Length: 466
Image (tube, rainbow, N blue to C red):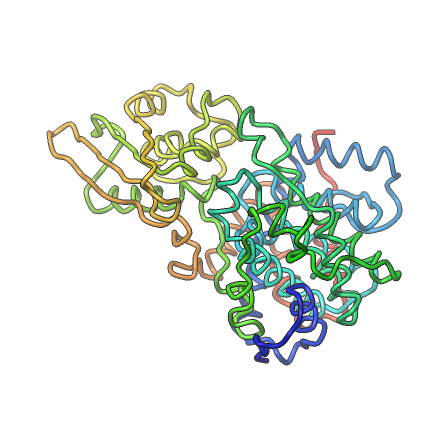
């Protein structure tokens, strides 16, 4: 369904008009298959995330304050919470180990799927309606981020896009599940934009707030859709308002309306989203790809690297240069650490980051032979540059390339089989039968009259760090 990008209307009105009217028949089969993989990936990492101390603390606080028997399912537990709080808890679980997908407003699945599923559970929505709403959230979240300059510009200003524009993606998903008309859908986006936020200050000391930002976006989005359904209005010009609009507040008054509307209704921004094969910040992924290729083609190993110099631009340098390495967060946001464990182990899965391995002599040795320097002329999407001196006297100079095009992107996509394998790797240590149940439930969503089977697979009782 193409949409007339020359017609009059604010961005939120344009998004709402499109998505309030789109039906299942309008969605390409490739996007349906793609969104299933994103749902499966998000839920798998969330079930592992629900067992982390950060997510368990959020769940404990919310269930203590609100009880455990009303509302929507808290994934990975037998608990229930009011809709927006369940979305907050589940969004935190989905992002608790930074192994969740990207796209949309940043981390797409953790900012959209918890909101869509909480509301779908509440209203008894079909599997198709849940998937359709999830696609709406991915699309609106991504277009909202484009409207304020895109990830690199927004991040360079210190904003965490999953927390900021993620709220609009979550609101779109919840509004679509609720079947809001264009007017109320617009109100939902305006309400969400009025209360959205999230900054990168957590990078300073590894604070847990990063893990909560997607959950908070989900909470904001669910509340916004419910309030809009109840008749509360939101600013229709939440982006464009000259005083207090998102263009002014987040981007110095500059907006990118044409980019946000490009191919509206044609490109639904599922194929452009990515899945994570490595359990660390996406900014490190193209470097890991490069090292794995060099390990295969050149026999590169930790013990034959004399020294390595990594050079990156300002945003990457700020994002993935954490030291000291004391927590899993620190490890995930240190490019030198990711390089070290990759060279030692030949992989970069969750086990290489949790717990951090820097106290192991082999990892520490290569880590100490790596330097990380700043070159402000390098853009975030240029990717880091590597200078490697080997013990045999040879050198390798190579650009890692754009991290947004690393393995898992549309350029180098993960296959469905690889997503299933990742699910098993994450969930089998908890319960192999659970992994199979989750995979089966997701694969059958487009034929399911409701989301009961999916929720059954998410309700597990196990050892949680309460």
